[in-house]
Image (cartoon, rainbow, N blue to C red; front, side):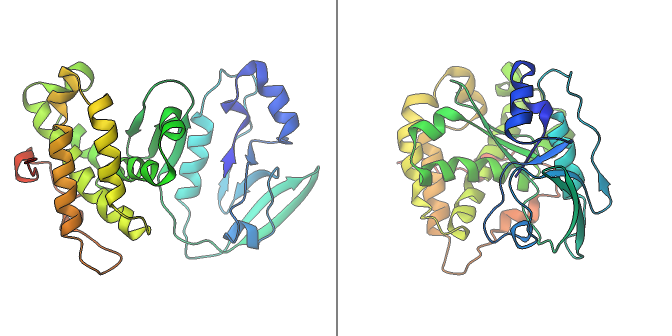
Length: 275
């Protein structure tokens, strides 16, 4: 897990640099146990200068707080081949090192928690961002249902496919032709999330439990109801997807084959109405 000095506010940046020993462009915030990085001896609070052919630009310590540098680094790392060993150039307590990491294929999406009071849950094709109220309110398995839904948007390339249709976002998303495409993508993400949960070892019924609580409380509003199907119908659609899972894992629904195709706007074909 990597971080950069620029992502900390300017009033806290100097303290963050000292605390995390960030004496370079990229810091190691944490190392996952058993990961290729851990096996190579990389540790939390190491500073990284480059990985493989990627070299990280110097930090701009005067910049306003931004995650742009962290996003750039994530893109550089994601572009590297997972099939050949990579040399990691770093520093630890002022001493330079080079360690060889044997990478493995991994998810290309970044995951972020947005600290605040907003019930944020969104995906932009490269990132999944979840607002902290979800973490504070729901148990871990129901939080996984939220993450699975947003990750499904990225896997199905929804942002790219929506932009290809020249849709309008914001208040206009629920009007005219926009609504058809947004409803289609929401239902597709619901359906694929069931497979993602099952493949990850969760009981996909957690998605049903989440929506039965979250739906009546926060999924209403006239604008949202125009761009998103009714929460009760989404629950029925999810339950239908669960019934179709079967026993094979990983489950790969037929929906995956459509992710390189233009959106049709036919959301009604996906919807299962609540009794």
